[in-house]
Picture (cartoon, rainbow, N blue to C red):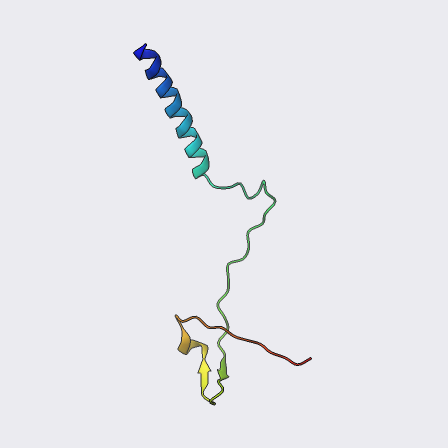
Length: 74
């Protein structure tokens, strides 16, 4: 009786190990017809004036979140 439970526990451990190992491999992107994207490129260096007339360069804001609004009247 104990031998039967030991064998069942071993089979269960092997099955769980295989299931966890299969999940650790990650998704199969090729099977999902997904293509990898190019890594993002750094923004080009530029400078813009603010509403007070001070000119800001992108290099001055390195490490900070920069939100730009582009507005046009067409």
